[in-house]
Length: 364
Image 1: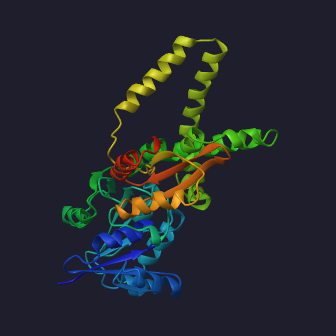
Image 2: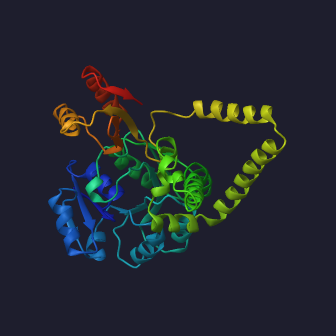
Image 3: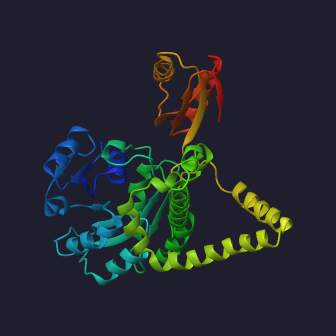
């Protein structure tokens, strides 16, 4: 008997889920697309078994439906699905980074003999779109599920069993608690990064040296400020009440630093840094999270023709995958600095060993 999985929104997350399921025994993956060109792309890239422009066709006889559309579109899609003759026992789930809102919508709808289980794979990437999809995206990541009260245990375990193909660690969480936790560890950092970059941008209007010197550490710690504006508009408005409270708490934290500086409270500043240092050292290092990790290697390279090609060729010949290359500085009589970015720490370690043996000057 074939299990049909329908995926609405075959981008980074939806495409990666499709690749986790596609080719497994007894599973057929169907992708829903808005444009004919997308149908062709999904098929030609081998991401899904079938693709269709029809919501009805995608949902017909589906055993599992994954809504991988933006947070702002989840209610619309779930409402549309509630009007269709869904297969008995069909499990609908989503991948949105907020859970309370869609859980409330699902509770109001009549899904017949289908079930809704909120989901949130806490993994991401610097890249987006189906071109960046990979079956390895969720490996060693947390995958949060928020089943509603009264859900049959067999329905929940059926979804959990399917998600074993992602190699993620499943965690059951209450929707409201999920939104508070994710608000603190992902949504708030994004707001802070955007506010910080915009503050420096305003300073730069009077002196362009701000932008010139804002390299290295500043660029790294504010990387998430480059996130998609539309996606984050929807996420923050959807999690509005949580974020308003957290921003109030954040203002209190900042006010504490203002007071310590005004009072020249050196001991208080040291204690604040020590507390943060202690807690941060307890955070898991080898577990994927919502904010994608990058692993960077810096190389001093002489300004010689072909040097960049030589380095990238050596890495390619050794099957070491790069996610990005950047030349930070290159002036006459000063070595250029090349930043190589990797998605996997193992790739970084292999590259470092390889380039060390080639006598390049390397720093992390």
